[in-house]
Length: 97
Image 1 (cartoon, rainbow, N blue to C red):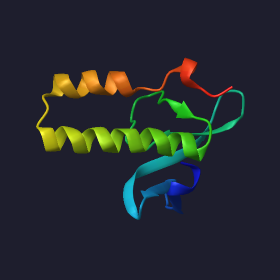
Image 2 (cartoon, rainbow, N blue to C red; image 1 turned 180 degrees about the vertical axis):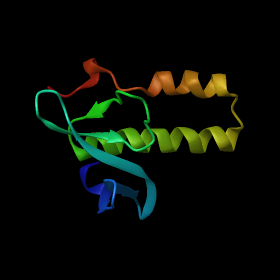
Image 3 (spheres, one colour; image 1 turned 180 degrees about the horizontal axis):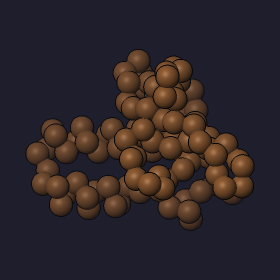
């Protein structure tokens, strides 16, 4: 999925496009170690989850985009959406070696 996302610079970070449609915003940041990373524009927590690389952040945005679209289409309850999101969350064990 590397080539499917396009990143357009914005004043806050990068607008992520998937097949020409905006799916959200990612913002640049730095980890405590000084390494560059990104977090999702919709994550307004004090310590947002960070992603190493634009592609990883874009993949997370895409997963959220797909889940919210499916939730609207199938009229899921908030509880059902949480259950489905929990199943789709990235796991450390799924990371490529």
